[in-house]
Length: 197
Image (cartoon, rainbow, N blue to C red; front, side):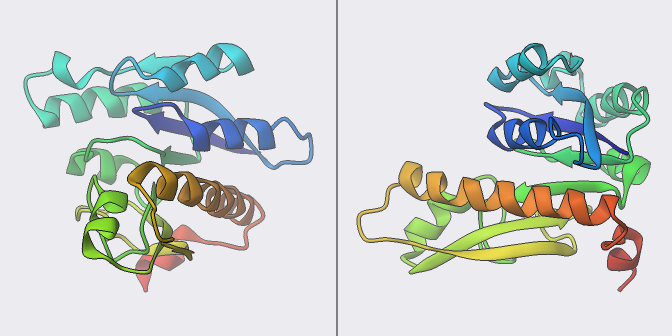
């Protein structure tokens, strides 16, 4: 059984999908803790699903590095097999990557390497492209430039707003994430091998 720690900053829609998937006794992974960098709405899912939560508020530390040290300490307590940044709107410092890589993955609402960064959906609309996508990557020291685990195209429709486009990307992100967790748990995907290429 794969042990997951999920890190969020917002509502946790991908997290909810994982929690619902893991209610199936056959699903080979369980979320053992939910962490956030702020008082995120998604932390209520911990109460709803009976999962422990923790917060490591970024603003409580004098530097990104000090915050990263505290985050590593909190996450390590749960001895996860996989750490998932899912809507964590903050770049983790190198020490977090060193602590958990390559078992540190991130969902992103664009077809990487197109539109990296915090505003992937907005940037795709501003660029006037007719398609964008969703990606799942291994986190490295770059901004959304780590090895790609899976990705899928999503069309940009006439009249799309940031909200409507993001609403169509999210289900794709969820599907990619759940499939990757299954593949890792069933040894069909080896993150060490992927990052060594």
